[in-house]
Image 1 (cartoon, rainbow over the protein chains, first blue to last red):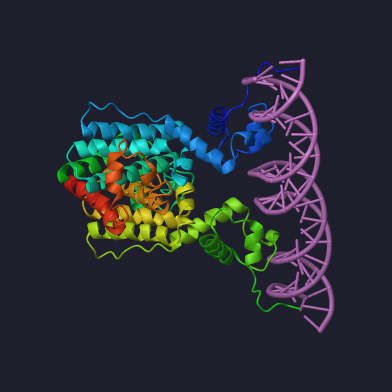
Image 2: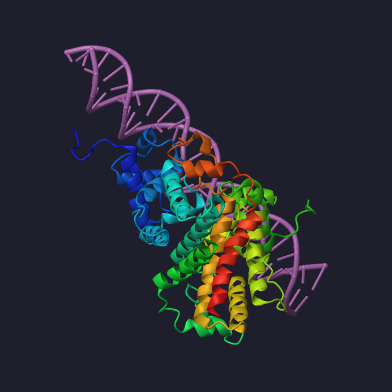
Length: 208
Length: 208
DNA sequence: GGTCTTTCACTTATACTGTAAGCAATCGGG
DNA sequence: CCCGATTGCTTACAGTATAAGTGAAAGACC
């Protein structure tokens, strides 16, 4: 009795299933057994395509990075960089449960290297010397990943936006937080992200 | 036979033990049993002071934040902000195994709130309106946490610095990475961190 | 001091985890 | 058609968090 539904498992299919599973159920919920069940397969079958769970997580990061498209070459360096990091943040918002993996266990795959090379090429072409190009890459990447991560977590460090709720805080001890709390819900995060991006890019432009 | 060594367990002592354990053995190695053993106690005893492992991790973040001292009020806003984020990064480098917790599960405790309020006060005192003060806080925090995280992970996304090693890459496909690879080891990370910080702070100064 | 209550560590037990080892069925190539 | 390799299934083990129950020590009140 061959089930027609079960096409043969392969690495790619496993990784993608893992990503959609984590998108839906959260990272903590991911176990080999449940992922197997998702694919109509026993847990141990996965080990034919993936050496262990750690490698599975790495593979998921790979899948995520694969979704990242580099912007076209014809744009100005500023617009190209900007668009690249916008795409990066978009990725985080689309996969808020998977994205932290990318931060905590950065990839050692070729996909990541391409992006770096592409970035360096763009900035080098714009006239930056290699060292500042690298500095720029790290500064922008730090900012973007940090922002995306904080956004995913709802800026929890500021109690206002998060679970704690500013209103429970004594008003006179935290006046500035209370002042902000009023219109904290209306903040346009796209604009806010862009604000920081502009800050850095403008600063880089000066160095040219 | 009362062991004189065993003073009664308490939450604080558990959290600190957890931090030093993770500092030494890594985050993955942390389990309730091992932590108990570290304290000369059975795993379940910990549950008298901590509701579950998740709360334990939150508590560890609390401990870390507690080590963060805010710089004195008399400095200029720029120097104060700069010093605060330097301290933040220092924290990451001192506890590279625990720090990711702070990124992935930001605190909902009062300690964090104080820092935010203090920051807002400083910038507000310098003449920033509340909205840009918040933007500034988020931009700087994003940058600093992103940088610290990447640094801890050895900038793994760029293959050169990390495990992969640039030399295994085809030279003509990745010319810019190869060009950098030569003096990649000599980068002064303090200066590099400062570079990005300056970029953002200078940009903020313009907005005043 | 004696009793009572509360605290807190220990023990036991359960459901789940990743994964090693071996078996079986299915599929591709001669 | 057969044979070997692939790949999924079964079983098993050690380690995980943690719920529930036990017992003893410590502090509070008369």
